[in-house]
Length: 371
Image (cartoon, helix red, strand yellow):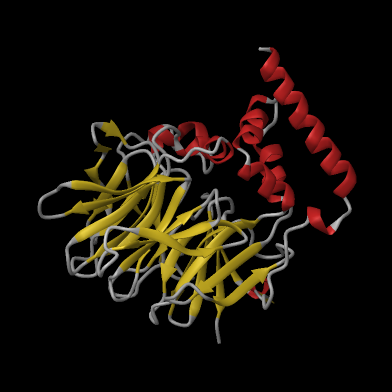
């Protein structure tokens, strides 16, 4: 007990000194990225009436959409300015108490669709629901059907993202943690939890194989254009992990890129490059907290609200999208440095010369015209 109190006192003292010394210093602000272009503030905004948190974005094989999953458990479809957003799918039939746009305490009942991917051959939409696992719904929408709800005898607690190999007929997907639910994501990040996994689901055999373990907040996943490797975002460390599917390194992983923030979803564009959405950039304080799990664990024991904890590791509102080459080089950085239009982004989907930008913490989608 005395040792716990000592850790809490040390942590509070360290943070207090840091805030007192650096509150007006550039070290307390999100770092600038060389070559960045502060252009995302020019994005068009499409509001989500009565909905919140469009985490992932997808277009069907006909090019219609976008489709997005929101905080109350629905998947919505954009039908244009005339009709706006319409209900497309849900991941559970138990929706009597799911009328509020944002109610984290109801996520385990209402569902929380995160990553979305269409099977271009069938038109089916595959959904990574944080609480109900990997699901699928037909081209006409409706109630989604469970595909994978448990792995190795344990229920999936925090299914996050997926990508589809339509040649091999397999689905690669991530779960962020085996110990925390999605609504506990701050605890997962601050505690140094590294129980995230990358998995493969074979549609033919219906078997699930764990490909990679020990990931610190496994998040977005995307397959390379030549299908030789997967990229996985490791949010806590800011690393993009490459898992080799083919070649002499098949079955092995390495660090593809290290980014100056918290990577969320990653999406491949038609040229084979990768857009990575950063939830936020990391300042020195955030780096110190997330690099020392004892600090994060101590903070979790304090009477701090979610907003207060978020402020410690995020600092200021902004949006950052990074485009990586197939070799992991930074090709382009687009930002809304002041958070004027976009902030806390979760996905960047390139489609028909535009970037469609989602955010798990905002009630709208942004559209940035690349031309």
